Image (tube, rainbow, N blue to C red):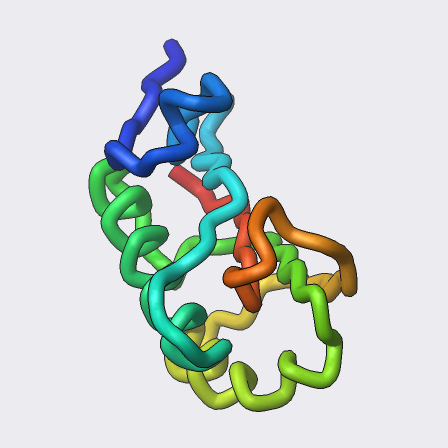
Length: 117
């Protein structure tokens, strides 16, 4: 059984994807950007969107097994560390950070993850 979760974000309809897909015992959350002017604000905002998708899927940050972070400026990753450490707590996932361009220059971080359903 496959369950698709939509958050109503502007890019979901434009590009043709959903926020998350539950399949094979996992929740696959699409790359998620947040709102705000700073990388910290955008990180918190993206995590809130992801939290909502995980909850709709019956999962949580405690069940995340893999996360990928994408930033146009790798130097901006360190200010996000305390925010991410708080989100994942005592259950940190395997993680990768990649420096790359994002869909719009206003975005400072994109977060993609996989969790147990």
